[in-house]
Each structure stands twice: as C-alpha cells, then as structure tokens.
Image (tube, rainbow, N blue to C red; front, side):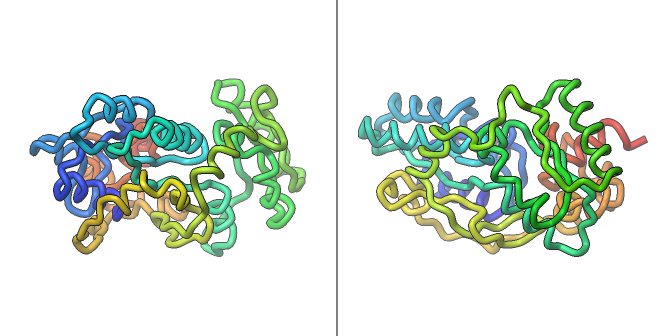
Length: 293
C-alpha cells in the first residue's frame, strides 16, 4: 500500500503524468486507487511497456512522467532498458517509481515460516527464463522440497502437475525443468546484466510476509536522476490496510479465499478490497469466478 500511496501523492503534489500497467489501476492504496484518482482529474495513463512511458515523456517535454516500475524478474529487464535509454537520450523529465521484487527470496521466506505447509512447488516459467534453474536450487537442496518449472500451455501445466505429484509421492527432493524450450540453468545473461547495471538489491516489504532482505530493487546511484522517490519527495499519510482483509494470509497459502469474511460480499472483482481480488491472476478473483458457489 505504501508504494501506491507514494504514486498517488506524487500525482497530487507534483502533478506528474503517472504511467502504469493496466492491472495496477484498481489495486487499492491506503485511501484511494489510481482509477479513483484518474476519475478525479489526475493524469494517469495505461501503457503496455516502459518504452511507451518514455515515448510519452518525449512528447510532453514540459511535463514530468513517472512510470510505476512493478513486477518480478519478468518485467525488470525492460524497465532497466527504459532507464538506460532515457539517460542515453537525455530525457530528464522521465523517471520510474521502483517497486520491483524478486521471487526466490520470497519463496525462501515462505519455506522458513512454520505455519506454511508446502509439499512442493510449481515454479513460474516466465521468471525462470530470466533467473535460470540455479536460482531455485535451494528449494530442493536446503529445504528438501521437490519442484517443477513449467510453461503456460495446458500441456505444460498438466505435465508439471503430474511430475510434481510423482516427485512428492516418491519423496524425491529435486528440481525438474519441464519448460525446456525456454529455461536454462544459467538463465538470460543479457537480461540479468542490464538488471544489475540499473538496480541494486535492498530490503522490501511483502504483503502478508513483512520485510525480506535482498528481495527488492532500487535504482543505483549512477542512475538516481531517474529515481522518482528521490526526484519527487512527498509527505505520505499513515499507511493502512483494509479492515478485515486477509489477502496476506491467502498469499501465504495459510487460508483459502473462502475463509476471508469479506470474500464475495464486501470484496468482489468489481469493487476489490484487497490486491488478491484485483487481477484475473489473483487467488481471490479465481476463487470468485470458479468456487463461490
């Protein structure tokens, strides 16, 4: 919520053009959302890539343009390239609000939590294309849990599920790569290099988990002219979570969305209270579509 609070206040206090991926529009902040801010006159624009945001900056030299840089390893390289390109062009009215996070540290934190009972992992193919298999080896080698990297076709998901169930049944704590057409041991070196050039690791706050060291990314000093947090200092109101929302526990796998008292009543895809209900990829949104009856 603090991240979205910052985006809202940058818009309000500095009158910047806020550019974002579409699924961020309805995510609730502490007191508002980007969609509500846009309805009240804020200049909030949906883009399909950070390069679209950079193009808006080129076309609006008299306005500051801030791109909401969110997502995991899949989107970070393109956001890093946009910052690099902005510096190359001298686009000093472009900046990003860095909120990117890394998935392996979050999985590590989940495995250390006694309340979370996980038999094995189906690991994300798109993230693994970037990180490589090596980023996940700790799951099997340190925690003794089997895992399978899968793609996204019906065949991939079914095969990944069958392989994982077989590993669990046979008590084989290994990592298998079902997504062989795209995932390698080392990952995408070019993407990893540009991420490392623009960003540095830092501690990040995770919904439902708390702070995890080395799980977030912030802009390196060489590129800090493109860091919206430094460029647009804002006074933030106290951060708050929606009363009764149990999204954090859903994300940790501690409860089912059906166990949340707000699910399907106060919290719906049309009017989400928590982040889990916003995107069609969210746990609560999926349960609302398929399981509410």
